[in-house]
Length: 97
Image (tube, rainbow, N blue to C red; front, side, top):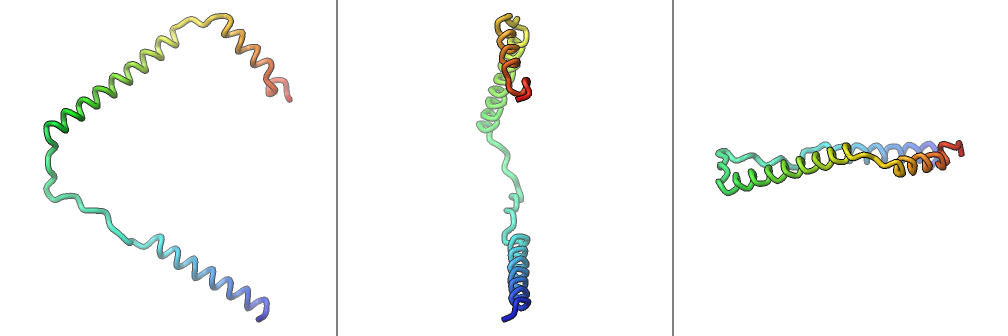
């Protein structure tokens, strides 16, 4: 078998594999489930659970915002500011290393 024939057979095998895998990937092997024709309404217990969950999430967000506000309004000490400046001066990125 000559070099060009081997090259052609490898190319044909690769093309066939590519076409077959493309068909498998793009083919529709399954469909999404259809929604029920008559959806059932949520029970009162589920609605109460959902309301409680939303209340908990809202309380968590309010607590995070309050914590961020106190963090922003808290005065910074001079030692913490100086510590950051010293660390920045010792950084190899600042010194060009």
